[in-house]
Amino acid sequence: MSSRALKKIYRDELTPSPNPDSGMDRDGKGEEEEEEVEDEEEEEMEEKTAKPGQTNPYALLNADNEDDNEDDNEADDSTSEVEDNEQQKSPMMFPDDTNKEGIRSSAAAGAKKKTKKKKSKNKNNLAKKAELGKEVDIDGLISDIEQRTDKMETLPTYIKFFRLDPRELDYEQEFRKLFGKQALKESQSQASGSNPMRDMTRSSASTAKLLKSWGGRDGRTFPGSTRKLVLGKIKEHHVPTLKRDILMEELKKSETSDLVSLFKFTHSRDYQEAQMIFEYTRSLGDIQTTVQQVLSKVSYHVPTLLVLADNRTQTGNLSEAADFLEQALLTFDRGVKSNFSFSSGQCRLPFKYFENRTFYLVVFEYIKTLMKRGTWATAFAYTKLLWGLDPEEDPYGAGLMIDFFAMSAGNYSYLIELADEPFFNRPGTIYSSRPNILFSKAIAHYCQTKGRHTETSSKYLHEAVSKYPWVAADILGYHTPEEEAYNYDGLFENSVISNATSENVDRLAPGPEQAIYSSLYATQMKGFWDSPETRRWLQEVCKSVTALQPIKQPYGISLSIVRYVMLSQQTQTFKYIPPEILEGEMWADDPFPPADNLSPYPERSNQHFNV
View 1: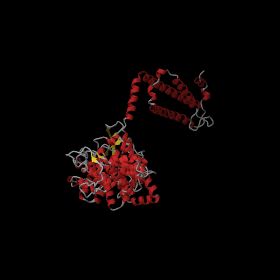
View 2 (view 1 turned 90 degrees about the vertical axis):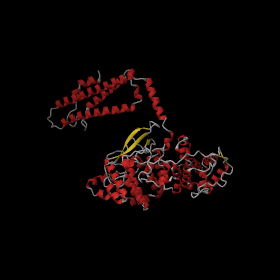
View 3 (view 1 turned 120 degrees about the horizontal axis):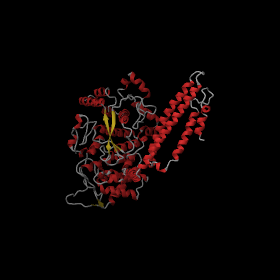
View 4 (view 1 turned 135 degrees about the vertical axis):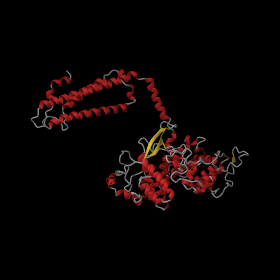
């Protein structure tokens, strides 16, 4: 006889008594639940002994999904159990003279109802599994697995150079390690008065309660979301607000890979109105009016925060300037979608959208601030972030400074691997004519071997000098920014120009773009090439080159170079930029929009540059 039959016979004896000693626990759970557990064990045995033909082959692939469904079913059952338990509990609240038989019958009816419900549900599940097992196509299943594997394998290998640990974006950790806790506190105290809207906002009773939980204990929590902030921390002096005036939408997948996604920031109606006010008041040239009118509309209007940061930089208050830029970063950080990642290297922000370009600008300006602070590792991480937003075009020239920050952070292996990545060596791309990675590969290997130029590092340098001889001349001072022509003075006395023709006699003369690249590299990397040992090594390699093979130089200058030179204030290269660009109008919050510019603001929609 089964246990179920025995329970039916002795149900009255098994039914709990309403008094405290009845065996009913504090939650009102009695032996009915034991009965239910045993029933479930029997049902599980039935499922285990099911015919093999009823097994669902997809179960091996979708175990997680089935677990989720089971969780849902358990949640439904638990809800039913709670209701039944409530029915069992309520009679216990009556006086002692309550009808006990009524209690027993009610509890028994509840147990029967639950058992029937579970049986019906399990039968339906088994029926569905059996039906799926009959219809499954094994060949299709194998093909599906192969396609998924192929997609994983086609993830571009160069993406690893944009990946980072989110903790690397926290400058406070590096600053504290370099300069101590006291220096960090002093820096933060200087920035605490940097929000002109703080006093106005704190006087409002509606935000008084919000201030208590604003940012959470770690400063990375914001109201209305469980997501943690990545690009910084909310400080006590930041204006508390529940509004998110910058949000994000996902665009179509990238053509490069299904695992690379495209996103676009969007502006709220209030933000768009604040932007119109900003453009009007800025034309009047009154910063104070701009700040008051715009920030009273939107507390975190990014172009206004950029104006304030620039103003503090010019007055020498670096801490406040950095704080305004951090507030701008947090404004974007609060608006990103849950499937967007700053650290994966797989999320792109197309540069043609005005809303995205503002984020590029904020990150670039923040990198400059990190450099002034001496937090090289954090600056290196943000440069990788900026580069990964659009590596195919590199609109803000992150690839032109990645080697400087990698070297400054002591990450020599990163540069050596980067130089060997096929993506950055493909002919016809923007990277095929950039000399900085090749030269830095050589100096990185030199530093990695603790100041000894090995055969390998000399080989790297030989390749760089052969392709870009003018860079070697700039490093060694054979050419100064004031000179128009390059005078090598026997630097390559043992070499000849490969494939020289009468139409291109002076292959050693760089064009405008290469002249900018060369000047930028010699200026930025001077500290790594300026020792007597490295200069002597470079001279020896130059004399050992027997056949120079200068690259074929492109015509004109790319807009990304112009943008980078202007924003980094590399004045020694201005003479190579066309006058019409230097003398033209440039928006401070959107320098040199691209030809495919898309903007929600009429004044900006028709503005673009072609070089």
